Length: 268
Image (cartoon, rainbow, N blue to C red; front, side, top):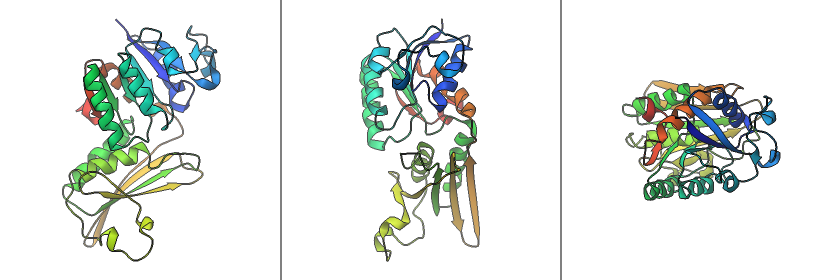
């Protein structure tokens, strides 16, 4: 039996690619889709395909009127938490691809998912290579404590940091020891120049750049006496790298309860 999918953000950069992939899948079925700006249009036609028989709705609440199993959200940081809680309350599992959620947001989502007996998979980035960035940086942080993260994205990206960078900093902060740098509270000059402290362990300073010509890139820079290590991921102009990871999460989440963060937790 196919897993029945709702996509929120179905005409976006990644959402459109997911529509095309799900329609071509043998074990997933697109049953509803949300895109406020194109509400009423066929989800296939709106993404440059033939008609697929699924009309776009303006709201997630409308889409949830159709029986489904999993909601995949690639919308906007300002609405993704509300969407996730709404979907859980309606008895759906959720895959969160939208960035911008905080650690507190994730705690609320985990609690709601456990109350509902449903699963949520959230990742700052669903590409395999971005997942390896986090895995490798987490391993390096066990040996080199001095690390900072730089987050690059286009000038039009509204949320800072990116989900990739936030997840990277949080994972690294959980395993690293205190570094050798001067505490931010003791520096001379504007404290904001040192970036944002991210993570609930030993916090990592994270710096977000927003400039034209970038898609998304993220790097962890480690420093030790007389040497440095940089681990970096650069995204291309296509959403294709995110599709396989997102659909893997959609297939897995139906057997889960509570929040699971990071694609690497699904691939071992």
